[in-house]
Image 1 (cartoon, rainbow, N blue to C red):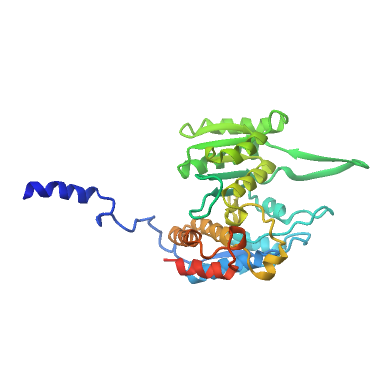
Image 2 (tube, helix red, strand yellow):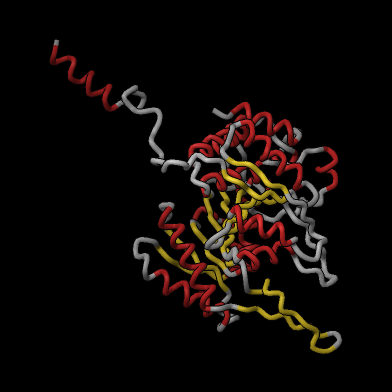
Length: 367
């Protein structure tokens, strides 16, 4: 009898469904006071911004997340971000932001660029990945685009040399190139990523992009466990739409990163579901990861059908940044359950739901 019980016992011990496997793991041991609520500066922004930031606030309240919000009205047609808003972000260290519309031409500078410079938010991170249940043309997409955020073509150094001739300067520095490369490799190291790809156009811009590549190569030597390669930006775009699963972490200068992140987002499910943020040494601003091109979509605003998923996932990133991993996991899992279920989706994901219906579904799915 005992001999017969041995294989049965062995089967129970090795079975993946056995109850011996713990259902709850220890995430980390908090320090006393880590559960104190944290202040977060909120900028609702323009267009659908107030709708989706309001959705995040609603979900955070429902799950009793240890955060509270300080709201400030900022709009893209302002000449500058009010100093009280900058002071609030410097005090709280963290901001949640809706889209800010940037006027085309007319000499009005982008408030988004102003904020990045003022707070030295030198790294933009966009996570583009397949959501279970959301059909896309490519599977196994899991790309993190890390973009230098303070210089390059976005330096805004333009002038008219003579009537009809405009000169725009692209600025690349060793300091900024090295620190974005260090951030990309550090991110890969801490998140168990296997490869970092530097995106460039050094075959044409031999000095500027050459300096960027030189900096990436130097940093790569300090991380021998992470594979490093390089790709020209035009070939990168072609490879993204044909074989995106080959990419892992991508590090780019400013302009290329904007193009690459939006392309990767479109491949993985659209800008409405891609989280992201901007981070510096002292501050972080979380927002929709890829282009907020629908910020001025009047129909979405009138019908209240803006997709809140991207900002909800960005707020999960924010919760991890604030060292509230359990709340982040619960929120992210709830969002993924709603997408997988498929009953509540906004128009951009093939559904007819309103923003509030998606929010209610997420709240109902939270454990």
